[in-house]
Length: 315
Length: 294
Image 1: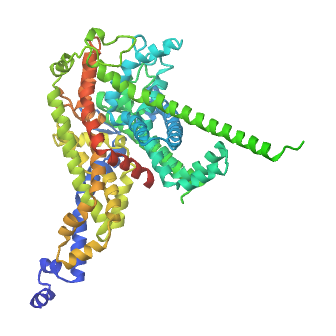
Image 2 (image 1 turned 180 degrees about the vertical axis):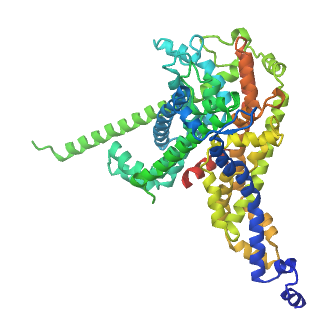
């Protein structure tokens, strides 16, 4: 009773906050809310949101660390569109993403459907674990291992292909082949990840719906096209968006395997950015590459979401 | 021509048997394909471990041997002789554990606030966090590198840890878990005289333990395997994390024995495999939650 009387005077900030009323509690919760989000908001402003804006700014300067930056307007961008190495690396990235993400989605969907059939629990567990295993490893580790396995003369892969009568394939040494090698290596490492996503999507569709359609005698194709794919479309959209964002930024595995070679045949956009910024110290120029990469990723993601209105169905 | 009743029945039964046989053989064919694929997935890892135990002379032996032959443990000793691997193991653990712990703290606080506390501007701030989910690392790495050098953190483990303590994805993930927890618990706790901090730390935080585990496992794997940021921020061998160490080791061994490199690779796999064995439920849940909310 006495306490209620003193707080009603609102003599201090502390009193205002500790007021044992509903309003006081609301104030305490709001203050706590700000305190709780403060670290994350500050961290994101300093290390993510701020740097993006700074990247845009830096791309308008010529700055090679040793001399102070000078404003050059859009010069970096006009240099970029005539820089063959940049153009080749962006083209490589585009080819890589189209092939790798397309195949990843198709394969992981087929695997997920295959894993739907009746089988012993240990078998399901075995398949899920083995398919996910490469995903757990670092791109550096798998890059090292695959570069040995794919060695043209002494590699295990060519040895087994040789048993089938296939001549030795120059996986990492031919400019015509190397990009496909990088795609295969990506698939080996990441197909398990999207398999789990697909299994999650399938488990969201009630199995009665899937089984009933199957029993009704819907043929394989129409079952896939008219039942499975529409119901799985949110998962497919997610896989495509995440795949493109990640695929355009891929670096570790191809870098360790090929260093972008032979020549520039497997050089990705990120490798060019890395070289410009951290090898050649051309901060401004590298920032313009980063900005282009960012804009491309945003545009493709926005495009995917816009197109998805036509083919994604949410239940 | 009219067939009699039993004949028709027989024909139908025969048809059904053929269909069952077809389905049966299709099932076995499918299982066989799955099994062959699983061998391709695991093969490189089995080969890595068994080759890491072979003498350098036998390391490129063809036809490949899938079981360890020589038990040449000196390859493992050689890794530690070539590069400061103990130091790099320590670095990897230090960076990974600090990052995981930091992300759990910041994301739990922010996730709780966005899910359960009301304050002016909450929606705006939440969308700010969500918008940064779309920003690729490449668009921020150069300014962050400049910032890190300016504050004198380049070539230090702090350069890796400090920017990674905050996570938009983790905040979003834990917010989902906090929103699923029943509201009534707060009322009960209030009647018992609990304050807001107590309600967060003793009532709702324990309820979201599965969410924390999901974030911990995902963050552990991501940080342990990270290559790009360490490559950009670190210069000295002694400050490297394991993936960078493997990259140098591969360079040193260009002409030498691949067994030594593969010994290093094998050692680097142990923590993630252990985390998977104990936390696979959370890892798989994490991948699925990401997928469903997409």
